[in-house]
Length: 209
View: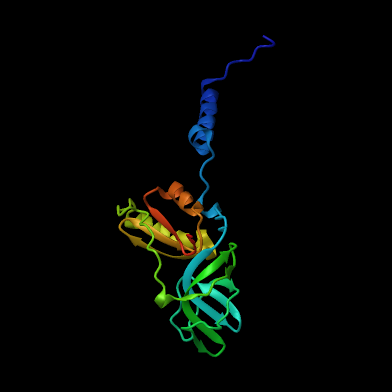
């Protein structure tokens, strides 16, 4: 009869139910958006003063703050964060070879997501006594097995790019060091791998007081 719709068949009805269920699953509980994948997240740069420790490497006036591994060559080599506002005047503990000058320091300043700007006199790292951060695991072992953690570890350099500094496995946790995280990467890692698997540690930290 005209004006009346034929009822959906069983197969069609099931397809509609599956589509709705899939949509709800991707949206998350109570219709909330699904958590962003780790590789799609960009931490928001910090506001105010921050601090970091590492090797300051000055090559012919091009200065960088190396927060990760430094090659044990002479002079040393590393790929770091551009450092502006730096001066060697009055700074102890530096070594030089050719056009390269370097030293290990605690540096304070600001960070815009790409460049670290030094705003305070540096402290020789050998004399620096930072406040020890709290253990984010609470001393509890993580849930990751060796195979799972190794697989995550292998993919992180590509996932995090230049912000990735290194990682290590300990007590069921994968400890991941990055240049800066405002908590966004930790949240994404918890959502993607589980809240008891990965710890993201930010090399640049906001100062207190």
